Image (cartoon, rainbow, N blue to C red; front, side, top):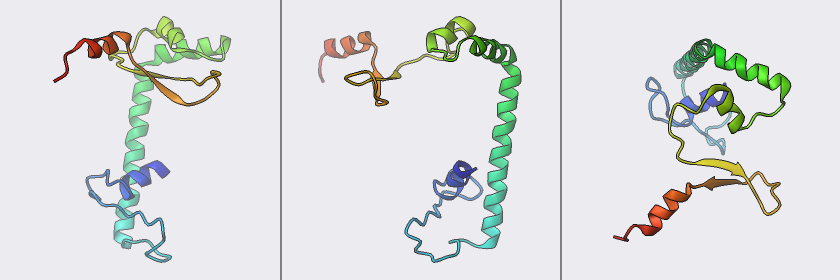
Length: 132
């Protein structure tokens, strides 16, 4: 719910409310909201609508992919952690091309730092291409 409110009130990601930001981190507008009660009601309606639509899409996706969800769930009962390779064996590769992926890595392999892994062929291609 917080994210939906932020999308509408801070990031302007709603057609009805518009491309505006009501963000007030220093509380410049005092104790009240920087918009009217009517706008507040519209924001609440739009947030409820966003959440409802997301819920409906999620339910439809789970129903559409029920067999895959059950397959993964049964596997998780046997194995606590599933890696990408495990998922590919269970339900197949992703339905879209994967250009880059991330993994955790550091000097000792313990860090959560995200490191982009670039396909070696892509790097080689860039090295071999003439500079413009």
